[in-house]
Image (tube, rainbow, N blue to C red):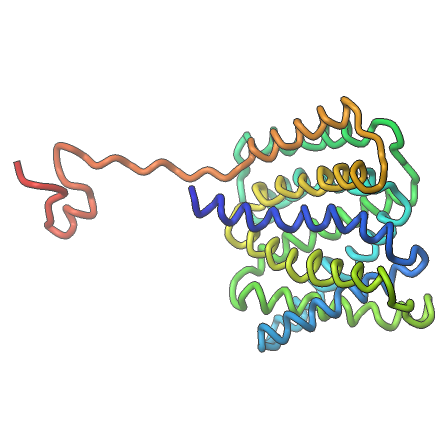
Length: 307
């Protein structure tokens, strides 16, 4: 149980970092260059992890890295960038709250990971809490932003399920490095053709790009994919609900957005959903006092002192 809690705590780093990334992107990065914003987020992170991994893809992993890079990096980062720039910090993660349910059901259908009833209940309660959080004063529902959030949720869910399906072979560090690098490279030509030269990086933008690339990407993706390898998809998906909670808290504390009773009630529901869906491990079977355990009988050694 302690081991699972440790992996869950590590995976929780990712949604908290992503929730803060909405604020950083909206406040400090240019609104009209989402392709460059996504590329400058992915490539430095991927190159840094490549140096650490010191391993290149082999065999089927060339194609898999391209697929995961397109889903988890190229498309996902662009959609998140658009959502961050068109919606309030507390509203941007709204549709992403459906990700735990999509991930849980997808893992059930595609990976044969049968969810516990608590996972299904929590995956339904969590979005209800997010609706409360985001339905108060100052909530924004711009169609472009909502559609971008929905697209981000769908492509990331597909990418996470494929990541879990292909979790054998190379280590998490290498796989994360490959997909971030591939995803960043895929964006370079479309960014140059549609948005012109890269945006100037100076002043506060330096720190913003450093945060989005190093913390919200390199660190967060390593934590997230490590959690996906160690825990069920349903458990990791529910941790993603910490994303909108972080967005709301930062929107209130830094962006001057309103916090009322609905937001507080919603956060309570979300946190309850995360706790309800936490991973449990089977209780250890107590030793048989009248004889030896199966393992002890197999070795011929008694379970304890002889009577």
